[in-house]
Length: 425
Figure (tube, rainbow, N blue to C red):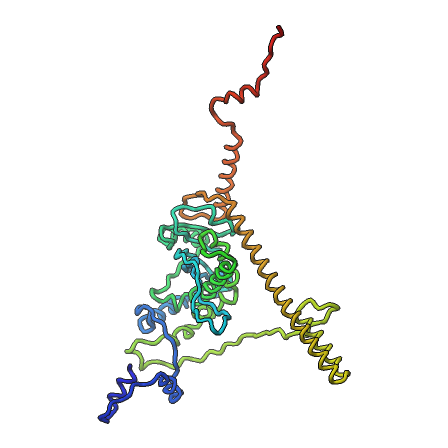
């Protein structure tokens, strides 16, 4: 190790030096409070701070002139970015197990299918409807059984974005609405992209929670037919006004503050001597916590809180009794209260699970009742386009079902439709 190598170089003794023990790093950290242990992740060298500092400075010089124009309002500034979503990759979860349980993993169905989502957010905290890119060559009806009005869907061979889909997105959103494009510098999205810095992390986390819930409901492998059903609530939960505006603030755009980004990016070595002390920024947030309320006690308690309140009232009333009777009564009341709390807890868990399973069954019933047919081969289609194609196909099938079959009639059918007359002898 590095510590052992340094110790050997410093030692002037002839005897061998012992290797540092397992507790040496913690002891070293205590001896040097000015140091801090931190876990760092590996990134592409081109994205490292010293290699992108000049790009970031130039970016703020260019975009600053645009954003400081009083005619440019936050509701008219947007950021578009794409992110890949693995359909059924479950994350690690903290669970309660017995002390003797040594198993550190759990079984889960793994389907390594990647779906790309294009999101667009505004500086005032709004999010446009997304574009979903399937890894396919056509649009299938089973993938859009969950209603998503206004969403758009595309397909590519590997599920990634390509130049054709990007051009189609620009035509429908930018060119139609006269939006001026501004390109971010290369290898800087992890610092300058509001989507990346803000809502995408909670979006991935919220989607994994939805997959976790579906897995608990008995669905082992999540496919493309489940995606919109899971992504829609995750999106509603993550793309909030607070998360979106936090992304714009962290990238130094709204409010405009380049030092918010530059203070965390090291300058190239040649310019270290010119580093100036950045001004400290104070952030304030309103933290409104609802104070717990004392639960009211109904005639018959129907919640754990109401039962606890009733238990406390009865306990106060027992102070007038003699000690032996009071102790016996308190023990019995405690047993009764404990049993009732367990019952209420089980009831709440069962009610929540029944509601969740009912939702899953409804979604699965809708999906199973839908035939997996091709609705279109266009590169990009909106949800309304898919619904129109679905309705046309259903009308065509209904019309075909009402037409009589071609061909000669069977002999039995001909006899049933005719009357045979015999002359009397």
